[in-house]
Length: 176
Image (tube, rainbow, N blue to C red):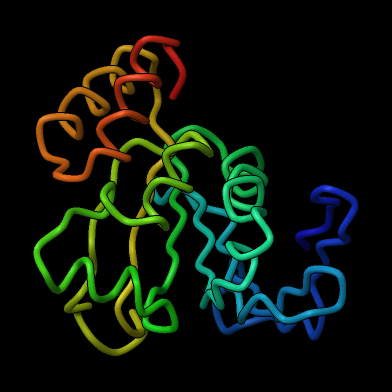
């Protein structure tokens, strides 16, 4: 499933289960043996792009590993892939969003930006059923032109100096 190394720490999938959907596997994700959260990986089918959903425990942020972890997911997803990440275990992200800040204004959002994601949707009221709880959708954009446009749109939206600086830097570098 999902395997790799992030700054010397082993990322691994355990307890992998095939779901009732042929392209969807469910498993637990560990980093150096410590749980990151439950994960679902849909490999895609026809019109439906691949996506990964992580029920995230944000402890890697305290170690400075969050952006690298998200970059790992960014790199394994194809263009137009989706990364969904829950934030109900992340009180700083939850509180910022409740107070009206955009995803890009949160620490979680800045880590997603650094990783390369440039389009976000906050699913604070998922449609119910299989969609689960509150999460952020981060899409891997198809083209550099679209990435630049999305970064510019985020720059007009953010309220925090940290996010403003990051977006200006990403636009100046042409990085996304």
